[in-house]
Amino acid sequence: MLSCKTPEMVEKEIWVYLMAYNLIRILMAQAALHAGRLPNTMSFKHCAQLWLAWGRHGEVGNRVRLRALLSAMAQKRVGNRPSRTEPRQRKRRPKPFPVLNKPRDIARKKIIKHGHESKLAA
Image 1: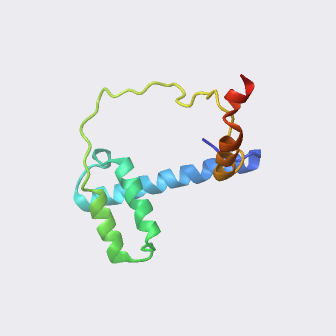
Image 2: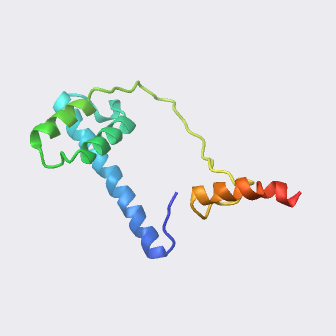
């Protein structure tokens, strides 16, 4: 889901997602080269989670830790999935509840004081 409102920012957000995706794929290719494996035998999700954790710990400039990251990325294998297909459908469905537009604790206090809105309307 995109969170931006203006067309310019939506375009920027899409480019950031594409850059992040390509960065993960490049790291997967480097890890596969290091481990002597094919990149398509590695888990994208596993590699993305490792990259995020590695970046949170401030290890971005450390070459020794980069090698450890690449070897950790190469550890998780995925099986051969030749006939894997995914449905082309939207997963997010509209909910019958209003959007929470105020802080959660304020909304809770209102519910405790006045009850849920569905109870008020009935």
